[in-house]
Image (tube, rainbow, N blue to C red; front, side, top):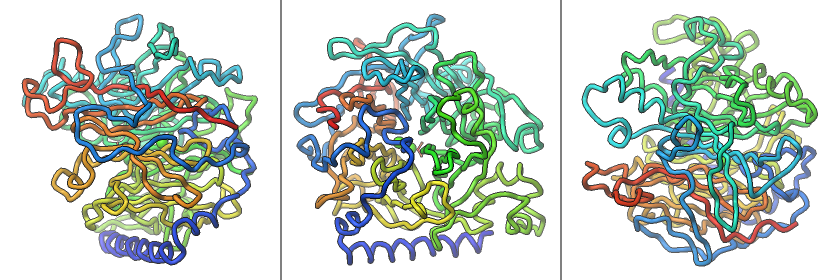
Amino acid sequence: MTTQNKTETSAWHRLLETRLTRRSALGGAAATAAMVSLPLTIAEASTNNGAPATVDPKKVKPQTVAPFRPIPVGSADALTLPTGYRSQVLAPWGEVFTADGREIGFNHDYVGYFPIDMLEGGQSSTEALLTINHEYVNAMYVGGETKERTPAQIKAEMQAMGVSVVRVKKDGGRWTIVPDPRNRRIDALTDIELTGPVRGTAAVKGATMVRGTVGNCSGGQTPWGTLLTCEENVDGYTKSWAGSGYEAMHQGWVTEIDPFDPAWTPKKRTGMGRFRHENVAVTVAKDGRVVGYMGDDMQDACVYKFVSRGKYDPRNRAANRDLLTDGDLYVANFGNGTWVLLDYDKTKGLQEAKGADGKPLFTSQADVLADARASALAVGGTPVDRPEDIEIHPRTGEVYVALTNNSKHGNYFGQIIKFREDGDDWGAQKFLWEVFAVGGPQSGFASPDNLVFDPYGNLWMVTDNSDLATNPIKAFHGNNAMFFFATEGPDAGKAHRFAIGPVDAEMTGPVWSPDGKTLFLSIQHPGEDSESLDRPRSTFAAKSGTNVPRPTLVAIEGFPGWKA
Ligand code: FEO
Ligand code: CA
Ligand code: CA
């Protein structure tokens, strides 16, 4: 396995070089222009993280000029926006928002926008159930930091993770949280059902029900109005929550939650594999099967595609809620542009894979899914540079992947690649890929993380340079920022800085209201590198009378909105 990893890893960098050479020979804009005008046959392309938009992307004219004057690099302890834009703190950590006194969790990440009238076919842009992922906690802020955590501290941390479902309303230009019986927390203590091939197997110690969801990074929205929350970094809690009963193999999955139905038990979809799940970009293949693109956010890890067994039926929500239980998991081989099936019974490479000790790596499909990373590498999945978010272009159907960086290979700046499925069908077995944008001083951005499209096909991206304080990025990048890229026209692939986050913060989870007038954005871990609460490096969103920074959701206004 180790030898193969090394070979495949250097193969990825050779592949990148080839694509970069080809891109500069063609010219970025020319290469991009050649890719446009791909007819979409299915309306469910996941623009806006899968949240609806009030215009049909296939009917709007591209507007490839940024609707703002780009701002220069900055390092202020503030959310800095272009002239004409303003923000408000909407759902900060610690805010009580349920009838039973539950609080908004810590370190906000992915945000899902579910119009309040969505199940009746509406697309309200002024009232919604928002889902907010809470990725991890900083012990200094949550529960108190001691060498040995007490049960009370562990419980406080477990309750600060997971997902908040929050009803919000816009009135007089301002958003507020409003009471609703569906306002609730799903956290590291909530009962969740395991579904799919790994349910009840030895890989999960026979479990069919498990406790909690953690490491909730990015995610996705399904066409039937459920949230997919992705469990990314889950292994560290075995040690820090020792004695709590935490079970790491019960985490690291995709969990489906129905924001509209608190009585529906959340489901972990084991058929989508266990790895460091960053996100799921959901769409529908030509034959009606549901497709989810997913990244494994780790150095030298892979890009995956899940294809459901059953077909999407817009009139049968109850049946759709079971669609992600069964399906096929594939891994991307970027060397030959193929999707390699991860099915123990059908894939010889999985049956024959052996560990360093000469023993079989897998003996069942449950083994394959429970260690999808090893399975992927065993059958030629290409290890790439930390796949973060994935989104589908709403006009061309191309799939964009943020590869954030890979310090193992000196790739500090990352890149955004895109691929197009064979026959313009997301259910295809083959694809063609190319480089869309490359991070670095020449482009002004580094470490691309979350992506979201607008209906015109412009890409909006937030960076995550959080773990790379000693690398060359800070010198040209300043604080983490949000960028706009046209994907067609003369400026395609050029980064325009829209927003700059507070000190130490990462901006995450961008999503629009369907009319495009509000951008919801998470401000994660402001002041994270502070050594003590007495001397915080940031005071962003602190309660009045205190200096303690708070992770929060913000609502940004000032956009012109979509025009058909
Ligand atoms: Fe939680 Fe990969 O970002
Ligand atoms: Ca991320
Ligand atoms: Ca996204």
